[in-house]
Image 1: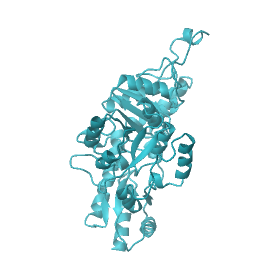
Image 2 (image 1 turned 120 degrees about the horizontal axis):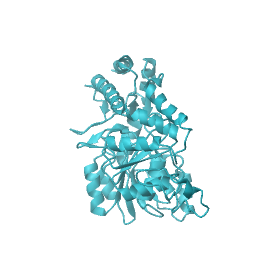
Image 3 (image 1 turned 180 degrees about the horizontal axis):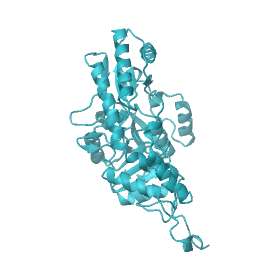
Image 4 (image 1 turned 135 degrees about the vertical axis):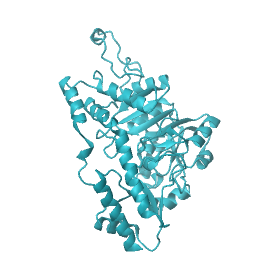
Length: 399
């Protein structure tokens, strides 16, 4: 990608200046976090939202708040960013890997059901590439087995399943503000929930257990008479330091005001890609169920030619002016860090609990080396046209 500064305008600068003019207040006493939280909750139709310093710490705190602890199992898709596995491990819990659907690339509810045991505490569906998982089936399973559900919507802003925005169906939803996402403040994240008690617990977990933290506000320095009283006890529960800075919150607030525009641009780019690959059966795009909305964090497809190397196709694409093609992550249980993870689990008495054998998720193992992701965050119609033409020329070269 070229220069991405087009994503920012006078709104970001205005809100950042407000923070600076206020004396650079911290997240415990400033108001930018409160403003982005209220605006985000309203935009997504939720009662509560809590900002975080990353889309990984959101997952960790949400799992803790949902009661995930030592020895519990959390079902996650095999095809996802490693942060999902790490968040489970941070809880001293055990990740269990579910297979994905070969067409949607998303967690397969049927395999989720197969992976449930007496130790299962929660399910973490991941709305990959901008598309929402089959939350209807996942929630049916969760209700049947009395499980908690945490939606990872890091790559999915305003994508829908049966009219419901991703991240708003389960007990809690999580989004990332990392620099490649639909809206960004460099790094950061946010959770949303309709459960006041859960929101309060998540808030306290995010801010070292401050007594005054609540579902609606992280402002804890409300009464100086309390904070300047040596008898006052500030912390009434254990917590982490996961707060988002006021400057980052200011950026995120400005970005949120442009969210529809950001998403629509990505959808438009994806539409151009779909036109280009139409009729080429060896380029199979992520399947979008009828009536659902894919917000296209990236445009994902399976590359099915056996006579052409994945890397050769990418090389030609770049030669033709393409941004390049991103590969899918290695499957979580096949990463080189797994030896360290197993050592960690052995050290806390959970050795042998995490299953990583080859073949446990055959669909994911099949499609992972085939997956190609094309960029969708182009500046304008000219850049979009350039990328569509680059892909078209590359396809023509190999046809």
